Structure formats: C-alpha cells, structure tokens
Image (tube, rainbow, N blue to C red; front, side):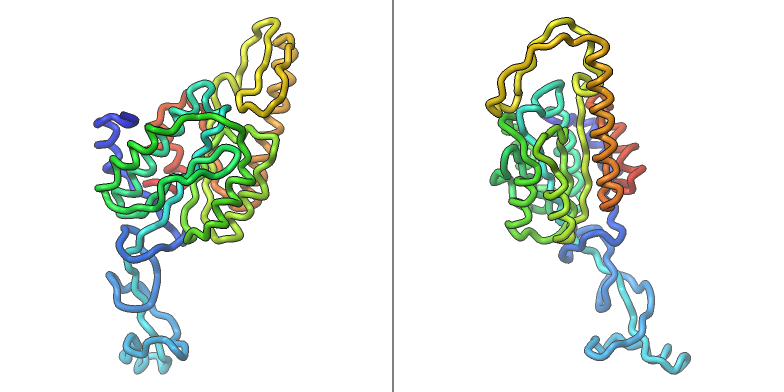
Length: 290
C-alpha cells in the first residue's frame, strides 16, 4: 500500500486551502463568495440590475439610502487534477514511487474533503487517466489505479498539457508532479493551463542521482526514455560533475523564474525528503494545505 495507516490518520488533520482559487460546484468544503442563499452571511455589496431583489437588505437601504444586497458564502467542491509524469526518467532514484505516494496523499486529502479528484498520467502524451470522482468511497479506487502505473517512455510536458487542456476540463487546481527533465520544454504547456484559468502547482521531484552525482570514473550514459539517442561514454570526473551541476542550477533557476513570473506555485522536492515533511511543512508554507 502506498500510504500506511499511521500517515492516513495524520492526514485527517489536513485539507486543501482555497483562497480565491478555482471554484467548483456545491458540495465540497471550500467557501466561495457568491450572492444568494447559502451557509453564512459575509458582506454587503451594491445592488446591480438583474440581481435577485429578494436579497436586498431593506434595513440597510433605510440606513444608507442605497440598495445593498447580502453576500453569502457557500461550500463548493474543488476540481483537483493530478498530472503525473510517468516517463522513463521518473523510474530513476525512487522518483516514481515518491510521485505515486505524493499523488495518493493529495488525492486522499481531496476526496476526504468531498472535492473531485482525477489522475492524468503522461509521458510523450497524455494518457486516458482516472476521471474526476468525489467522495471518500473513491479513495481505494484511486490507490489501486496509482499502484498499477509504471514508468516508461519519453516525456513531453508541452504536448501532454496541451492535450489535457483540449479536453475542456472545468478549471480547477492542476498539480503537476514531475522531474521536469525534458529537452522539449514546458513553457507552452503551463501557459495553456493558465490561459484556461487553472490554478497551477508544480511539484518537481529530483533524486540524489540528479542533484549530486558522485565521481565514478569512466561511465556510459544511456537514454532512459528510449528516444533513439545513442549512449554516451564519458569520464565522470569531479570537473565534469561540477560543470553538470552549474548547468542544472541554471536550468532550475530558469524554471523557478518562469513559475514566479506566471504566478505558478513551485516547489523543488528532493526525494530524500520525508513525505510527511512535504505534506505538513512545505505545502503548508505555500498555503496549499492546512
């Protein structure tokens, strides 16, 4: 099982936070400001022609000489889309298992909170996935689906995310879980999500082998994603590793800058990080979980 009983019990304390993020339909555990009959009165606003006059506050009119309408909050569900990279590079260094456990935990939180949760794996293109479902009764269905996934193939985030957008999903919270190690780019795909009013969160998973490879002398590097490229023989010397790490840091900085400039929540997660630290610490600091 991806998550043990102790962690599941601890997750009972957490929920997704929605502060002006994507809205769904009635039934979940997120407050959304809308005029009309609902759970809790929150504020007044000026009446506009065409709005339901039943919610005009006549006492406020007598006091202010202005037509004011009551604004309430009601609970709505949140569509949560888990976009899961299952390309070949995710199979290195424990990244894919970590991604599955992270997706399972986030999906569990969504379903427990009566939100709708779907899983959409991708490599070179988007796969069929597990469509949006809601309710705690879907939790083990989600776990079984995740446990059946295997990494393999090339990765193309642009193509996969564009494919996701063309399916005309209702805007919601799109959580991308990936190592983002791709020569094919990511900017176009992420931008398409934003154009369609998705709130985007990028959780980048990197293994020790990605972040801090060790000197090993002569090695042969193979393409883990089967892209048809020939293997490369080289000397994995301290100098070569230092050069690699400079290029990696430059790439990560470009990714961070892109996310910051496009208001995408970004988090780099080494897979040596305990999952509990991510859920109860790092995602809370990003105001995603509480």
